[in-house]
Amino acid sequence: MSDYSTLFESVLGLIKLSASAKGLTGLLFDAKPDPNSGTIDHPILSDALKQLDEYFQGKRKDFSIPLDVRGTEFQMKVWNAVAKIGYGSIATYQDISKTIKNPKSMRAVGLANGKNPIPIIIPCHRIIGSNGRLTGYGGGLWRKEWLLCHEGSILV
Image (cartoon, rainbow, N blue to C red):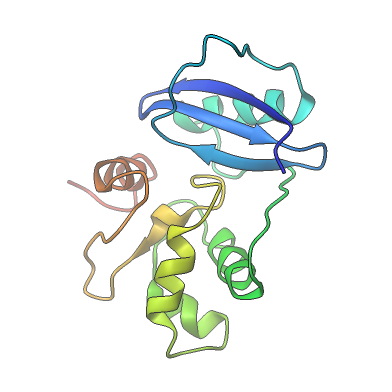
């Protein structure tokens, strides 16, 4: 699925970005440098690096990177709903389950959210528990908290 990749040094650590010819396929936290691979000059990756840098500098609130995301029909519904949560906003797993017209699917929404291959761009960090607590984040709760603080969604 991914033909190209590059690394991005962020305040959240080293991030690996992957892309196909169609779009961004992955964003992975805690990437490890690979001495056998260099930065690939690919327009989608170049654009993703630029937009992520602008996001971390507080200059960008929305991403316009083409995506090439693959998942089950249910995962795609969840990720499409999550992608619509705006910068500085939060939603609950229950909100997403209602949005996808499957109101009792909160746990399944959480599982799909946890399998999101492109965090930040598909902003799964903006999903919180119904009790207002930060719950589950594949990149670690400290990153979720940082992202939400960065966007002004929560104050610490």
